[in-house]
Amino acid sequence: MAALHIVTTTEDNRVFYDMPEQSPCSNCGVCCKHFRVSFYQGELDTFPMGFVPIAMTRSVTPFLVCMQGTENGADNGKGRCIALQPNNLCAIYDNRPTPCREFPVYMRDGSLNPKCTELRALYNVPPLPHPLKAA
Image (cartoon, rainbow, N blue to C red):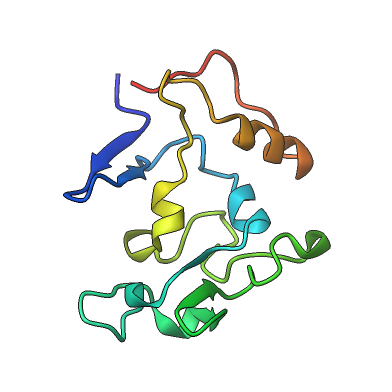
């Protein structure tokens, strides 16, 4: 069985999550419509070693930026990350900011993140079949 969830631990002990091409995130995108995605400006492509396109962000504070469209979170149903494409895939997946990399679809025990289940219901996205466990 193919892995459902790819976990990478960085040298500084941060945990990043990647999803294979077919995953629970396919045809969903609710986290990209709900959360404000703010992160340190050093991740911008205008900084050395940065990778997030600055043209897709807005300034929040002198040191923080957020993805355009997420400035006010869900914004009464109008919030939507600029990188979220109509097919609910991320246009900058390989260059997405840290908050997107650190959001786990699966919990440590392999169960689906309860926040995913809650947001899927909130945005009328069909629930995932249970039990669904990470490999």
